[in-house]
Length: 123
Image 1 (spheres, helix red, strand yellow):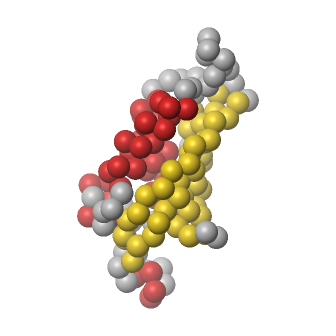
Image 2 (cartoon, helix red, strand yellow):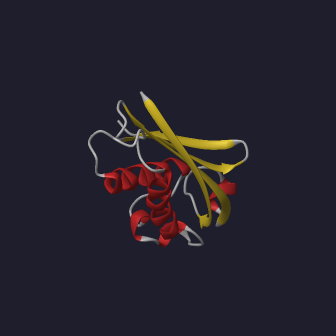
């Protein structure tokens, strides 16, 4: 099994409910996103996917989140923008963009601080 991993960042605000009083206040993070894809085979160029294409796909998704109030954007109107749900959203959207049965999003880690992250594993 082969893996590729890319990292990116974005800044955004969110407001959580029923978590802790501190997190129920409107607040923001400088999020770090780690996207990992996998495949059991390489293409004719000897790669899973060109890093540049994967970064482009991830950038298109992140641009919809960057410098927003996450609670107000369409993808989170009916879904709380927790780190867990952000990771799931990024994983599912990236898999749609890849659109290749032999290449799968393996996981997405979303870091909201240097020592706290949520992981979503796309199965």
